[in-house]
Image (tube, rainbow, N blue to C red; front, top):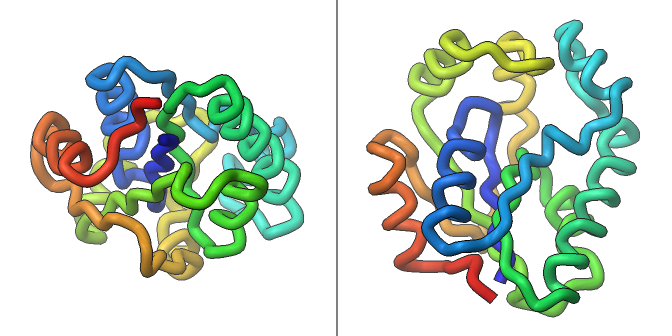
Length: 165
């Protein structure tokens, strides 16, 4: 199974995702690493991405996930996946049930603190409000409040889904 850890910037996707992959012996990828330069520059300047900006990026990520699936491997992807149509693109042409979405959530204050404390290559903390406004919480995803130590959050996720093949 492939697990997509989703949520706004600062929700802990990379921290939890890398630990989840390590604990289960699967591959981890951060969707931010797949953004084209133009997207990174736009976000760094404080401008939110639009759907046209995101579509080629999401299609690239879908190819990555299909590659994992086709090779019989599980994996963990950290990706904002804020809208239902983005999640549909990520899971396109994949067997039903082969991709599990996990929404990492937290209080506005906690997420804002994390963003202020970190040095991110291109994520401008000013974009948090637009991300929160854009987020369409999925009805069928596991929702995990990420306000505990990472090991505890990973343990909770593993009670419900596993990225192992």
